[in-house]
Length: 375
Ligand code: FES
Ligand SMILES: [Fe+2]
Image 1 (cartoon, rainbow, N blue to C red):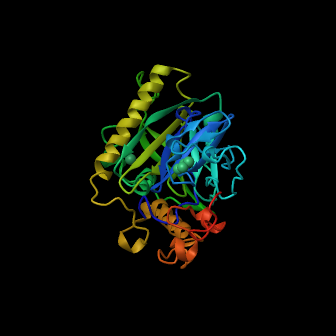
Image 2 (image 1 turned 180 degrees about the vertical axis):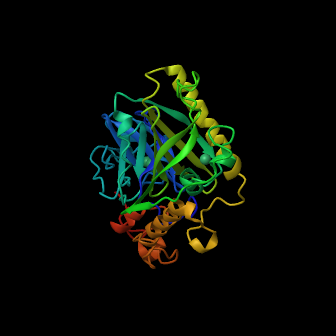
Image 3 (image 1 turned 30 degrees about the vertical axis):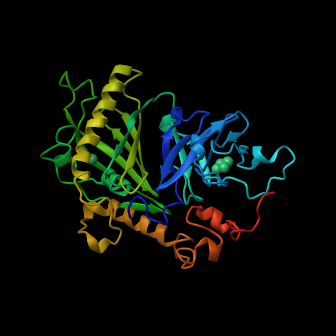
């Protein structure tokens, strides 16, 4: 799979930090397709970034309070996406029902992020309850745009064996490459694993006084879910503290991915300077991963397990590949030979065009050209 593979639409994608989406429209790209997100009357809304009239991007339009106005000819749309005014036709015009926007199947704000599901998502977001727990400090790394593929990045986050090589400059322990056997659990679309590794715990204040060793055990819970979201919960048995990180990668286009990394931890007691240091550390960890991932000649993640060599240490990432393969194979549009045939989906023959979303295709799409002119 790569960043624009068909069949990945039935999943939640982090598209922006919650604070960066206000009342004026913001354009985001998901799987190569543009969407517009904004708040209207306090409600978060998301539509395909395309006016039904002449397909102008709505993201250059203006939110006028209760309507979004298209920049091109001034058509106005309410928060449900229905056109309520066509200025050139005057006040008496009958607005045709087809003059409406294509809503995303889902849009929500959670864990500090705006999430968008192009199609009905097959599963929910991770249980990152630490984010809303007042005993935890929360923070996020600045979203990072990269040329690594979203699937590659998520796979890398799940990967257990690269820490002593790639992360030797941060938390990897050189002489502790061995990873004990670990089971992978599969619950529907979600796969997870739990295991213990050794870790340099720079956050433990008792290390300096010699009461605790720097290299400590760490209990990991790691999970992945469609399409490109991973979650990790790290418990430190020597200190009784916890760090949880949500990692979600937005497949923007065939050439770019945006990485969102959200952190909650209960070992800093509200110390902002230490949280800032922790974010800088996490940035360095990502830098280390990107040295490897951005050097790949391709951005795709092979889903056929025969393409790569897997060991018992790669069970979680192999299961991630299986889940993505199942997601794509079970997509109603991908698995419908007529819908996935570009000729059959031509506007003249099928009534829908490549600009329409799959949800619009399922609800009938556009009528034949020349039909239904608005008077
Ligand atoms: S393209 Fe939007 S009003 Fe014409
Ligand atoms: Fe890594």
